[in-house]
Structures are given as C-alpha cells and as structure tokens.
Image 1 (spheres, rainbow, N blue to C red):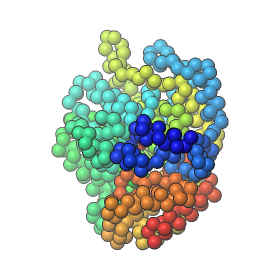
Image 2: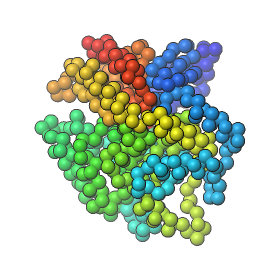
Image 3: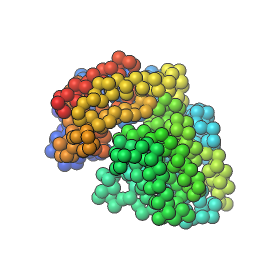
Image 4: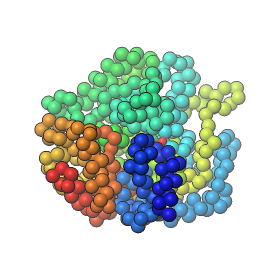
Length: 454
Ligand code: PLP
C-alpha cells in the first residue's frame, strides 16, 4: 500500500541529495513513480506530470520507448553480463563504441565506458595524470575547474564541482583542484562591461590563476560547454575560443564535460561542435542511453591516445577498470537510443523547438518585475528570479523562492527544477518536446510566477 511504501521509505531509504533531518521527520514524502510516456511521467496516486527536466536532464528520447525497452530485454535474455576486460566484449558494446566515435568530433579516437558521469570524470583525471607521467612530467597534475561547474560528487569529481554544498563538511575540494570564475554574463560584477569585455575578464582571471599556480603544475581544465547544474548558463560569445587560446599556450588539456550537452541537447550532436571546442577528452553519460540503463564514457582524442598507448608497462595493462565497464545492458540501450535519436530527428528538434520554447518563455515571463534573466541554448532554458531587477538583487535564501516556484509549477502538473544555485528555475525537457507541450510548460510557468511573485 502507499502507506506501507512511505513507511519503508522513511525507515530504510537514504535518498541522494536529500535533506536528512527533514526526511527523518517525514517532511519530504516520496512520490512513487510508476510509468512514463513521451514527456510525461505517472505516479502511484494516478497523477500525470509533464517532466520538463527529463528526469535529471537525461531522458533525451522521452519515456516509454519500446525500441529501447525491447533492446534491453533482448540483451538480458541473450546475456545480461560479461565483463569487457581485455579480450572480451559483446556485440552491443563493440557496436556502441563505433556509433559513439562516428558521432564524435573528428579528432576523437577511442571511448572508455563507465557507469555514470561521476566515474567517467574520475577516469578522465586518472588518464590525464597517466598521460603526463608517460610524458615525464609528473608535476603537471593540478586540474582547473570553474565555480558553479558540476562534474559529479565523488572525491575528485566533487572537488571539481564548484558548488559549496558538495564541499562543505566533506573536507573538499582536494588541494590539486583550483577554481576560476563562472562565465555568467548576467551576474558579472561590473555592469558596465560589454560581453567582449566580460570574456576578456574571464580570460585574465584564468591567466592569473595559471600564473599563481605555475603552468608547469597544471594538467587540465574541465568545463561544461553550457554550465548546467550551476544555473544553465550559456557562455558569452567568444568565451570558449578565448579560453582555449590560453590553455593551448600553457599546454593544458581541455576536458569538455558533455554529460548534459552530449547527444543533441544543444541542437548539435555535441557541445564541442556547437562552440568549436577542440576537446582532448569528452565526458558522456545521460543522453548516451537516455538513462534507460546506466552507462557513461570518456571519449579520448588522437593526441591523448597516442601518448596513452605508449604507456603500458611490461605487464601491458593499464590499472584502471570497473566490473561494469561497457555493461551489455547499458550498451544495448545505448545502441537503440542513438538509433532513435537519429530516426526521430531529435538533434534538430532540440535546436528548433528549444528556441521556440525559450522565446515563448521570454515573451510570457521576461518582463515580470522579478524575472531577471531568461536564457538557455538548445533544449535548455533557465529563468532567474531577482528581488530587484535594477540591481539584480538576490532574494533572501530563507524565502526559498526557487523551491516555491517549482512547487507552484508542480501544482499545475509540470516539473521544472529549482537549481541549487540562487533562485533559478531550470527546464531541460526531453528532446522530443512538441510545440503544444512547450506551450503547456510556458503557460504553467506564467501562472506560477504570478502566484508566487505577484
Ligand atoms: N557532469 C555533469 C555535467 C553533470 O551534469 C553530471 C550530473 O548531473 C555529472 C557529471 C555526474 O553524473 P552522474 O550523476 O551520472 O555521476
């Protein structure tokens, strides 16, 4: 029964990213999700909700796709598991590696499969260190990241993540991780700066950090093409080009964390294509399988691979592997999912429908006295709320404006996400969003803004 489930949940289930004390007091009741179709999910109480955040921006093809369900079932029936350690693979894992490389930017060479975005980024940092050790420069180790970046919540990846809640009381970040500023033009300190001047400011901050730490101690820079969990912030024009010039000058590798932007979300297959980023390593997860099964990957460039392949010792093996690397069920889901992204034309729809959705959102709420910014790229849209529009003042966090708005949306059967940073409501719908579904989300948001902010 529902009552029994809530009791078992409260007594036994330690949910991720939950407020532990509130959970113990029973203040965060669990919605039991039982089904989904297209952009909608259903719960055990019979509610049907339009999920305008695609789970955690991962169900790119939408819910309930029989093509993926059947591929998973067929794989489970044939062979649910065998490892992928040297000399072993499955038809699904080998096929998926080819499909990923066929879609990746041209300078990419190999893909290593993991389970989720966090472990893929852990892999990336180990590979970068391995790379520098092979090149005989073991002191080139530090990793640069950005405040408000999100790269996971492991020890290294939680350190790379530039959000305080992932550091506080965990003794993070680790000392070899250094953060630079987020490219958030709306939140620039100097209001008089043009976009180009703000980019120059981001570059000079990065240069100063590199100078302080010493370029010979820095191995890599990691960044999401569009800052995700930190507030869905597209970079100002020219940002990536300018950042890459600095990185190349100091021989610092570029890791593009495309866990959110990979496989179509920005209206291009990869964010690296979208912004002309020449990545040395690309992190993939979420959209790789549309989350029908856990699978992630590290796509490695020719440049990095050529060094890595010289590096194996006399045993011939790199000491890095997971039991579930390239898990057959995940790989089968990935193959079916990538086929579906192509056949449904989802990369294109993310671009065109994403623009329509964002413009409609801007028309509906952009002029409101407490809406500071409506922004996004492809099928990503954020609405940033401010106490005062003229000086972009933040609301007092205790007012919980973001969560109140998300709750007001939910009352209208639409899921948007109150981002952990400031009062930002994020939308990242499945890439199959239709015009009428986009209109539903916008109408619900307009009503929710009026209800909460007047
Ligand atoms: N990188 C980015 C950009 C992400 O958005 C996320 C998760 O949201 C991760 C890494 C971590 O992925 P996971 O939660 O699968 O470990």
